[in-house]
Length: 305
Figure 1 (cartoon, helix red, strand yellow):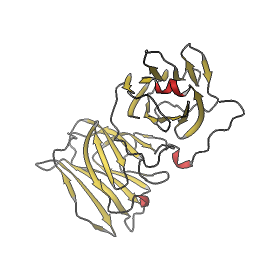
Figure 2: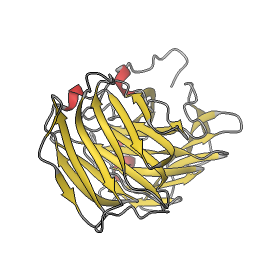
Figure 3: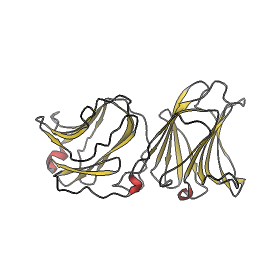
């Protein structure tokens, strides 16, 4: 990206909401921009040994009187003979028909990572990287602007991840990935394809790299973030570094999103909703790519292409 080149304008709704660490429960917060298809809420914490129940509510407002509508009520219950999860909707002060899921994957005394992914017609939930349930909306998702967490739960982090700026309504199912992470690209990259990497920067990060390898295991291009000098750069096959003249958007204990959009002969880059230019490789070089590698001081939640 040249000094005179302008950053691609992107809507404010693509900016990631800062995560919250160790909030006191009950905890209520505004969801920036509300909910929409493709948005994801990440909840990390633990279930106390004496827990009876807790709930995560996606609310239509935050008033106390009258009580706001609750589009999605996620309610694990531990005190019954058969622990289970209830999902429901509160509309006009009345609960609707509840949905119940047995075989609760949240044992007392255990830590958890819960992902809430919002699609066009339903919410999907995974617990510790495994799909757990899906719940169909009974109120418009666009009405939801508040997150409420209540009950017997120890929360260590709440994170918010937005849809990506190149494809509306992304619906990939997020799972956990070990770092370093390697994924095959059997057909290479073609115009219109998007690589999406979402995760959390660790507390004392050193670096983060995303490399693309070709058929001969050469590395035509690497995206490298250095936390020591807070620089972001493209690194060529021969080690030549080209600094990306844009704000450094990786922060310790903050969520991030990296997007690479393949266009004719080049890769367009956006970081956490901010367009930061592109690098040219040539279309043949892009088609010969066969592997994506990710390493560094991060915890990955989603790798999609």
